Image (cartoon, rainbow, N blue to C red; front, top):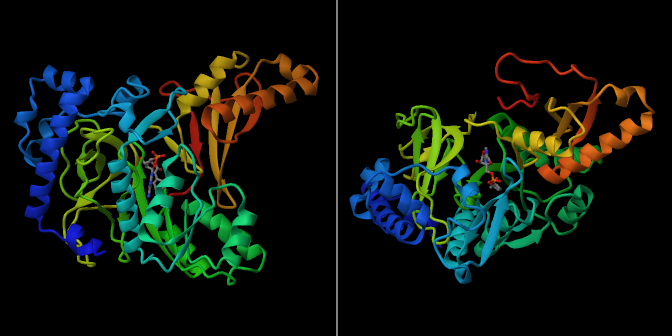
Length: 432
Ligand code: DLL
C-alpha cells in the first residue's frame, strides 16, 4: 500500500478540490440528519447550498465540547443507531462523558489513518507491536490496535497497568514497536534500567501521544532505549489517535487533510491566524458518517504550515502543542478538568469547596495530589476519622476522574485565597 504518494503528496489544488467536494457532502448530511446543525445554520440564515468549498468554511458556526455534552449521549449522531458499530467516550467536566460513535466506514477510515501513522514511523507487517494505551472507552488502545492490525503487524493488546508483565512479554515475544504515552514509556525505560535490562530488548520504535511532550523528551526516550520515537495526535471527538503524526524529520505533525480540514483561530477573537502564528486548532472532519463535526474547537494551541516537508509530504503540518486554551489537564493520559474535582467534593457535602490540585511527575509518572480543606473538628477528633474521610474523598475522586488521586486534608484557611480567579492547579511538570 503506497499511503504516501496517493494521499499525502497531492498539490494544494488537488487537496482543495478533494476537501471542497467532501465538505459539501458532509455539510448536507449534517444539515439534513442532525437537528442541532440544522437549527444552528438556520439561525444565521445559512443553507447547505451556500457552502461551495473550503473557501466558505469560515461561514459555518463552531462546534464545542459543550455542544456534545448538551446533546448527550447520541444527540449529534447523523445515522440511526443500527448503523453505529462502536461507541467511545472521554471524561467530561461534571461527570457526563463526551460520547462519540462510529459506523463501520468510520472505523475503516480510522484504522487506515492509524496504519498511515505507523507506516510513516517505519512500522510494517514484520513488526510485533505492544499497544500499551488504555483499552476501553478511551480511544488510544483500540485505535492503535485496529490500525496496527490493518497494517498487518502482530499486535499484543497489552493495555496499561502491569509494567512488569509488559517488560516480560516485550522480551519474550521480541517486541519491536510500542505504542503508549511518552511519560509511560520513560517509566518503562526506568524500570528496565533499574533491572539492568535496558539493552535487553528488541524495541526499535515507539508511537507516543495522548499527552503533551517535548522534543527533548523524545530525544531522552530515543537515547535511553536506543530507538526512534514518533508523535501521534488525535482526539476522540474528531476520531481518536491518527488525526496527525510526525515523520522522521520531526518538523511538525502531518495532518491527514484528506479527512480533516485544519484551521488555526485566535481563541478570543475567533479570527483566523496567519500561517505560523500560534492559535487554537479547529478541525472539520469531512468523511465521518456517525458524528459529523463542523469546525470543532479542539482547545489545543499550535501553529500551522503548508510548506512541503523534507519527507516530500505536502499535507499541512502543525507544530508540537503549546498548551490549551481551556483548563483541561492531561494526567497519565486521562483528561481532567478542575471542575470535576469541585463537583465531586460538593456532592459529598463534607468538605469546603476550597481545594488545590498539585500535579507532579515522579519517576516519569504523573501524580495528582488534591488538598482539601475540612472543618477544624476533624483535626481535633481521633485520627481515625481523618483517615476515613481521606479514603472516602479519594474514592469519590477516583470515581469522578477515573484516576487514582492522593488526597491530603488540610485545616480551614490553609489554601491560599485569591482575589481574582481562584488558583486551583499547580502543575509542576515541565513541558519545555
Ligand atoms: O488522547 C487520543 C489519542 C490516543 C491520541 C492515543 C494519541 C494517542 P482524548 O482522550 O480525546 O483523545 O484527548 C485528546 O489529548 O485534545 C490534546 O489536548 C491531547 N493530545 C492527544 N495527543 C497529543 C499529542 C486522545 N501528541 C486531547 N501531543 C487532545 C499533545 C495530545 N497533546
